[in-house]
Length: 204
Image 1: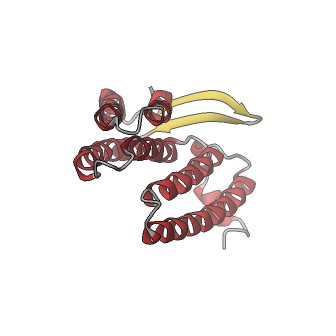
Image 2 (image 1 turned 135 degrees about the vertical axis):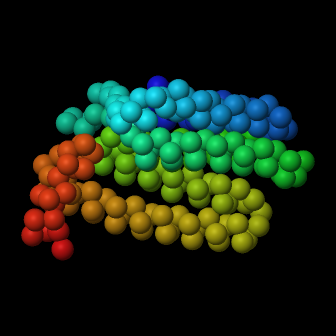
């Protein structure tokens, strides 16, 4: 279920990107249904999460760093926010975009952005968190620069990429320090190592 939450929007984004330029209705339907499905999937885990259980899933990925996902109560709340607000954005954009706008490109970028955000909140290790953070930087750049013919959109997209890219470098630096101190990038181990991190000379 956790892998479906993260990978589903990316698969849907690819499908929407392949639609014809004028397929506004189909693109909006796929995007909205995908995000609502993410909400439904998360809600199906309500009894487990409400009972204090942390849901986990893992695939082999990099050496010593699996493609691990975890959902606790905080991640559960953010999944509902991403899916719910994303679905509302799809509904609004369906009627807001002009007839000549390439709606499938917008909805494909929105789905990829949602997938990246879901990856950030569900990442089970710090390396994966950084990867998904950088994906949010790229996809937000594409969303903000959607109207490529407008100078303000292009300038805003470049500014967003600079800010999120710089933030990503700072995040990467912090992740490397924390991983060095803890001896692991696994989020469960990191969350349990607060005293160890605060007592380390690199903490300051």
